[in-house]
Length: 250
View 1 (spheres, rainbow, N blue to C red):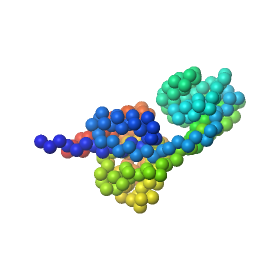
View 2 (cartoon, rainbow, N blue to C red):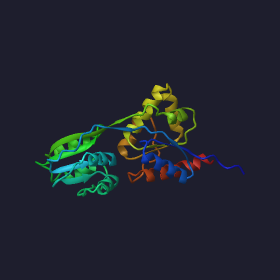
View 3 (tube, helix red, strand yellow):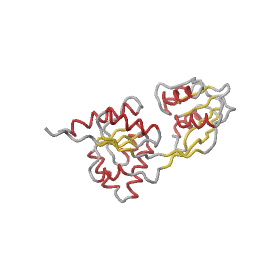
View 4 (cartoon, rainbow, N blue to C red):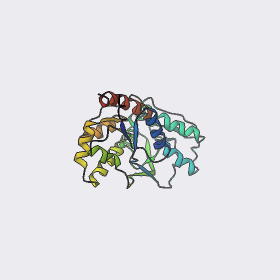
């Protein structure tokens, strides 16, 4: 009996240990990874302000850049969106005071809104941060300042997965943010294959982390099959491979 071909699954994480870990995970699940980084980090060399009552970090990358810049939170209440950001803060030697139950901008606003009126809140993140966070804190009466620690750009070589999708050779795709969706489509557009890549994704199993990413994908005409309850890449990969496998092996 001939062995069924392996699922070809695209991962769009930045080209660092996150992409290497994604490849290792997908291989352990019996899939054939397509590592296609749709995000690259360009540091701005800025650091979070130190004269604030609360400071919000939203990503592992932001924590690492803040630590590299020698940032010290002083007496500020340190807030992390998500356990991965909190873990990065602890690994860098910082304390973590607040992690919302819902790992999102909305979740953090809900956690802080009753206590930040009149407080100075520093939000340190990428240039693509959601206004939900800053607007929500502002509406709660906080004095909000945002520092852009890094820009997220699309690597010029990105797009192998778009070509595979256009050719009907991509079985699944793992979108981890709205920006990965947008950059995938931009890469397809550059190659003149946007429509055929979209058609290919309609035949594939598509997973997203979080509702905002799902909404971005669906707004672009990409049906979403899987949104894990946990905002975690491992959960996303496992659920997508599991969802894709039955169709793939029929």
